[in-house]
Length: 278
Ligand code: IPD
Image (cartoon, rainbow, N blue to C red):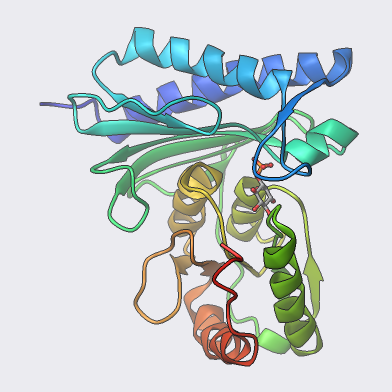
């Protein structure tokens, strides 16, 4: 099956993410309603998450009826084209709930099985409607913030790196993550917890963070952001040669990644992963 060039897919990802971002922003200004909780009481879904995903799903079904869909808030469907749209309608849901202006709509299209370890991400858009920022990338064509080409920070030593990370919703996992952060904080410039993995990855791409790592992400959290970070020159992966996935994602300029990887591996040895903390 022939596909549009990544630029055609990127135009669609950008248009849909902008439309969805406008809806999320409007709903935020009207007041946010918790619709349900998911893995834990802290892991919430708002009515807007569901409405925005429905909007994105409908727009994609009209434009690309043969593609699959894999989103945070509804059932996945496989398509016949070999392409799947991986969507987080609102990444940073807790920020959204509290009116903190760091939440994003994340829309990516990938080729192959919807598994980050093997898929080939073709195009992605991350829109932060509260700040009016639009991050985009397509395979081989660079990463952009609006019309500005993005490049990760280079030649940063680990001790001067500003690192971003995140915490999952399950208490055991958070405690483990906090232990790792406790082991790292004395070895870097500082640590940020922005609250949206998609924006963390875009922050690496545009130099607002030097590195980002997190364990326990879902594919929709990082599908678009990882492509944007890569296209800005980051290495994105896990420990050793592993690809990013639920167990770990690291993103940084290659030279910083090489400094950070053994340090994180050491912390993983010092604080063994609790199998319940998945
Ligand atoms: C969460 C955010 C957060 C990260 C969590 C994610 P959600 O996604 O990306 O920054 O630390 O691991 O689950 O729940 O806001 O879509």
